[in-house]
Length: 124
Image (cartoon, rainbow, N blue to C red; front, side, top):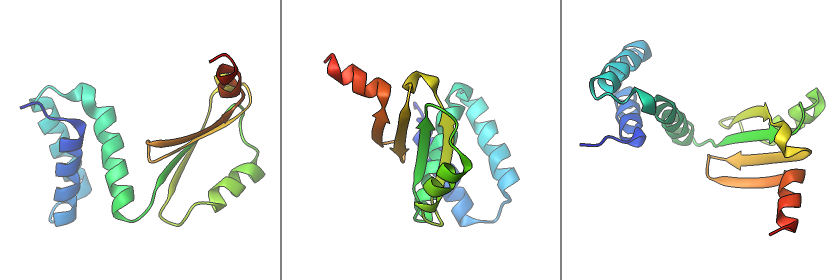
């Protein structure tokens, strides 16, 4: 059976929800199972799915904010204040955006306010 990252993530989150084992034990067991099925290459996707499921379970969302340049502390604080207590925000920089920022919610919905996107739309 071909196991997807979501299969592993759901099994981990369900085992965690049931309790009875420390997170360290659950993580160790997850790694053993992943290695047993020769799926170590899927670990980044598995971890992303686990994060997504845990955030969603507690009613939050994940916001990935990518800006062309490092945000000032004031701008970063303003962005963080828009989220709720259960939301997770990650910040990164990507010079290829040239200017502006890109905001992705839950790895699915994306708002792209970058200069590079504006230029590419001109030539479509």
